[in-house]
Structures are given as C-alpha cells and as structure tokens.
Amino acid sequence: MAEINIRGDIISNDDKWIYDWLEWDSTCPADVKAALDSKPEGEMLTVLINSGGGSVFAGQEIYSMLRDREDVQISIQSLAGSAASVIAMANKSEISPVGMIMIHNVHMSGAAGDYHDMKKNAEILQRMNEALAAAYVEKTGRDQDEILRLMDKETWLTANQALELGFVDSIDGAEEAFAASVSGMRLTEDIRQQVIAEKAKAEAIEARKQSLLNDLDAYGV
Picture 1: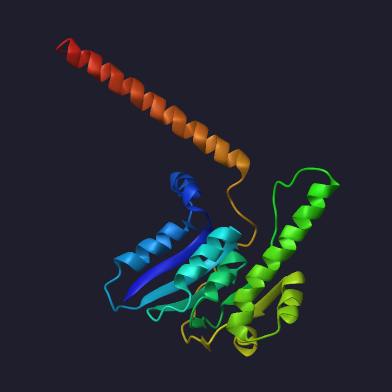
Picture 2 (picture 1 turned 90 degrees about the vertical axis):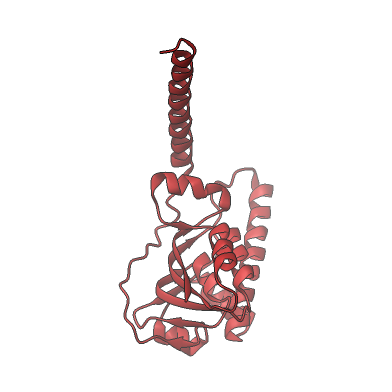
C-alpha cells in the first residue's frame, strides 16, 4: 500500500527548496501529486496527517487533488490543524484515539496599508473562511453558520468529538505519538532571506572553485 506523510508545515511548491535546505519537515502540493502519480494503478494511497497546518492555498490545492478519489484514504495520526484539517476533509478518514483536529479562522500575515486596505483585507479573510468552511460542511453535513462559529473560536476536537461531529468516519485502534506543533509557520521572511543569501554564497563559492579548476585545466595542471 502506498503512503504519503503530510508532516510539518503545509507550504507552496516554491518554498519547498527552502525547507529542504534547512532540513525541516514540510509538505507541498507537488509532493502529493508525485505520490498520486507514482503509486501503482488500482492501489490505495494512505494519507497520514501529522501537521499543524500552514499555507491556506497549498492546503486547498492538496484538498482538491485528494477529494472524492476512490483510491485515497486519510489517517490522522496526531494533529490535523488549520490547513491540514482541510486536507483531512478530502476523503474517507480515520483518526487515532489520541489524534486531534483543530479548525480556526484564516490568518493573514504581513498586511499593510491604510484603513481602506485593512477593511478590504478583513473582507478577504471572511471570504476565505467561508471557502474553507465549505470543506467542513461537505464532510460533516453541518450548517455553515455552525462551522463558522467553531472556526471563529478556534475549536480543538478530540477523536471522539471529531467522530461525533462528523469530521472523521472512524477511530483507529492504533495509538500514535503526538508530535505536531501549531505555533505557526516556521518559515519567516527573515529566515527566507537568510537561506537565499546562504544559497547564493554557496553557489558563488562553487562557481569560483569551478573557474579555478577550469584555469588549471587550461594550463595543463
């Protein structure tokens, strides 16, 4: 049986190399697409979720890839939080007895501008909340207003609560270690710029080495 582990931050394809460079756990849409494309035809893909969330748009993209496929099953092993909880709604699912689901309002970082911009950003966030709520509504069959209220107060659900409310289809018998973090995305803009600078420096050193080797070759050394 094929597996993919949704672990660490949910991130964009463009940021994947930064997480790899830092050796941080992460999952991007391209990872999930690769798992779907590489599994044998007719074989089930088990999606193991151990993530506190991350990028809303990356989560939406992964959700759409997994949604309603007959060859996908989802297993929440520890935490499916924020964007990861949206992914967990994509298909039939089970949760570990010690697993949890966390849903909350969409957060926006780095907002700037005058009060017109802030008002517009607030409207965008409300629409994004409604877009994510659609995944929870479809999975649970519950009213949108009820789901939005749960998101608004940041709701943490135990395995039993998640089953009772319809966020999962069953509780698995195997216990898994709780190893997720919901402190927010690890990648800040400062870290991003630092990694870009370090990568550029490493590439420059490698280019100088190659240039020196070429010069030595030219002189027959």
